[in-house]
Image 1 (tube, rainbow, N blue to C red):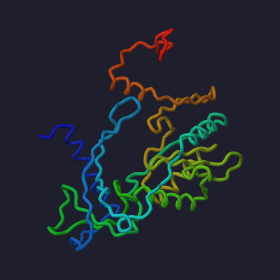
Image 2 (image 1 turned 45 degrees about the vertical axis):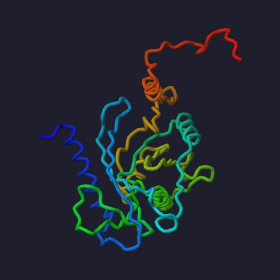
Image 3 (image 1 turned 30 degrees about the vertical axis):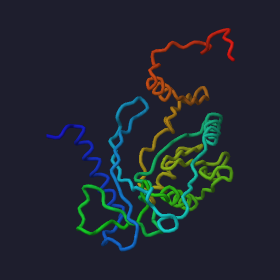
Image 4 (image 1 turned 90 degrees about the vertical axis):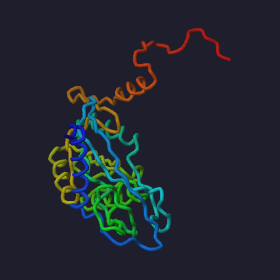
Length: 272
């Protein structure tokens, strides 16, 4: 009998394989002569919440993109993500003007975008394909050199259709004209922040985006990039806390039981 943990991982693998089929990620083709074929592997990760509890077991097929050949398998690779200073400004605006601050993500992010290049990949374990055949990728995927860039370009085009314009100072921050304060969307790969005076506008944007992608986990923003967001709307305050990260570092270096002091150095010590 499989352990509870094993059954969770098996279910995660089956979900990933089904997602590949639903999004039509690949074709099965004979092994091409004279073409580089990249490898693939499974990557497993436990997704945890802010309090450390297990939220989900995630299994993902990842391409070994380090073997891709520039000029043949890929061209440009850079994709912008929201700067932390931009996020700080957005949070300050949300606190000052009491804006709605929500977040959501895109399921199977890179698998939503079409590849321009012909990219061939060995099938990962558990894929049943005829002998002498491989996968010809039709969509971008994790691990490929161009995956993040084509995803950004695709999302940029979608937001443009919805009336959003990217800012010049940060190409991962998009704004939409509104009555007083513009609606704002921030991008950090598959994590999206939605900021607006009206929750109704955020829900409308979510429904519009669902016409293009599978969107998940629309909720008030409480956790981003490993940083906890503590908000008190009555007092008009918004605090960013890295307590979890600090505790993890202290545990790693065996200092979790150290006593805090006001001056972390010997007094009157003369250094030379």
